[in-house]
Image (tube, rainbow, N blue to C red; front, side, top):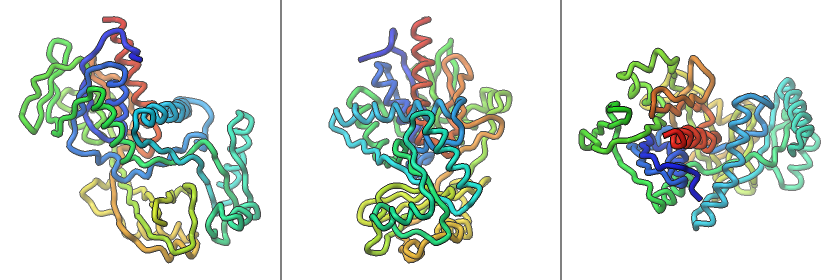
Length: 368
């Protein structure tokens, strides 16, 4: 069912997770959408953790965006699966800690969510040992103080979801151009793009959705927008590992262990990540020490994790806003929106960001 009064011609620049979500939703709603990108590097280090209910605040923009995204993920999953696509969400997330102050915060958070009617269970060290004995959790380190179990949060595979969103979008009419955008030109209230692939995209667009991460700022600079709108962002490198676990280790759900994410994968593999290294870009090597500390859970790793074999190592860059909260969702000029700076929540906030874009465009459709 289309939700629009008038079809708009839209270009989405950047095919990371946010760009794919936006292009898919706008296409689904009946707009004429072209997705333009050369890669999806913005999502390359993402492990796909969905941490909405475990967010420390219970109000405000960030809370609302997280809750909206989780609702949309459920709706989108049903739609994609109904159309024959794979769209798996692994529900359930453990938050574990070796830190007494963090343990107090977790207990307060679980109590607050219980008052809101959101299921979240508290586990002290003894209760966690029982979960290990039941086979729910693998063996844990002795210094573990406690944790919480969030049933509605979880994890998805970003690469698989992007692939399925693109396939379904293209079945609905989404067009894809494999090129880098070099220039944005405003023409009589509409927009034209210069592409590296063929110098000029002759199409005229009603709307541009710029979802190109850190590259967005350079693209907007010739329009005089990068400084006047407080759009400054810094790169924050994230390194991740894929590990082969020792035989007999059964990890069923994702774990956030004092900020480090452990994501179970098929064939007894594990994704582990990701580091926080401000100021480094995609072309720079991440810190070996930071990678080592992550693999050892900053000294708290159980023996099975220390014994795990490294299968591959990769890294990606997050865009962190410096002058405003993440993410930056802003209409900069008529027909021009910036959707970037999601920092560590580009996967979680993909659907809510896409809905923000759809609302902006559909409100314009009513007025014109």
